[in-house]
Length: 236
Image (cartoon, rainbow, N blue to C red; front, side):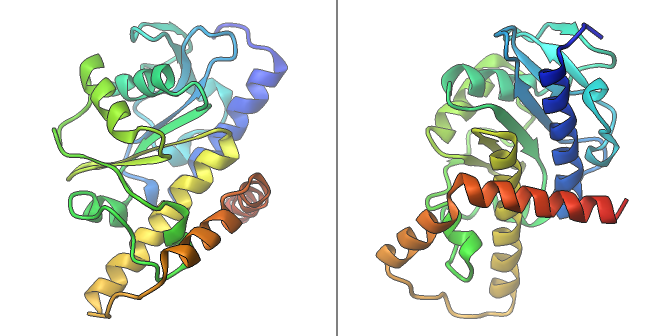
């Protein structure tokens, strides 16, 4: 692996912890699913290597450096074929530090039919509108497909990939992991409530916006991530 400074190694180790947190929170799907970190030197992005599950990502050594044309330029192991998801979002969203694509069970069930969560819980109001990419349910393996996905996401933190899975991003590692965890929590509650035949909850848009503002904060992301990290450590 290319030599990396201590700050980059520390960040990738923390992203590896984020991968394991996502596994515990329902995002695991065999060796599928991948997260990436924008390279601080502008060379591209550090992508989880392929052929391992989220729970198997142990540290910086489990990431490979990929440029924006898809060429792997550092790291041991291969790159995922869906690298264009990451390259195109990073190119279109300079505010984004981390990109993730996973197949969480409940969010994937809802991916083709939901554009807004019912406000059963606080988690639902974290997201507001849920943009959906419906053009394809296949793998995103070409730059033009990644570009279409990034355009569907727009300025949102999440884009649902109809009948496939989800892609989400964050302005920090903690933010991205919390987006993924809260997304699947909201989706799980949505599926449970719909399965029980419960009526949709009426809540004024102003109330939803207020709740969203209360939990969409860096402080909330930080202490939530640390809780998830302790939980992951307790479970080995």
